[in-house]
Image (cartoon, one colour):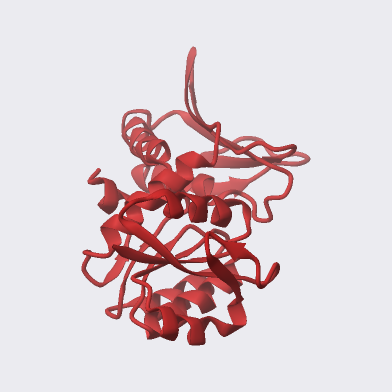
Length: 254
């Protein structure tokens, strides 16, 4: 039985992952953390204040801590988990380079961690597809458009940011710009654009535009269950993984 703790247990993704864990025969929810709704019952587990994370981890001894919260919170949660020898599955996005480095230092050689801006199996295949396309469309203009719900705090999305990095690397380090305004003639860059509105779960489009033709590679998430299902795969995988940072590529073997 895999003992699981969830940070952000009352949030959009955290609550869904919590529900999924409770339904899995090989998993047990042993702890849930939040900054709100403290004391709420989640499948027989009392939601704890994240300020008490060290005390609760010591008491419950989870195998894996799942975090879909905020960048600043996830860094501190990861540090606490590593100190208690708890493996990690992190889907939080919006880290600064400094935050990411701090988190990785805490994890390095202490525990195993799967960190990904998107746990959807389809998105991870999408990243492979755009990488392969970029290798064969080197002279094409590239634009990335992502759309999410009105409550998403960071922009562009972690998925779009990774897509741009993948394509830039495939094209030898092409410049990445974010949005356009005023006089801005197109040069040899990758344009990244963010849309926010309504309850859009997550759309990502990569456009390769050449003379006389264009190709579009699109991923659309219709439900957050796509992300939760991938997170469950990561939970099962990370408990037997070697210590260090891993991606969903490792989990899925792609």
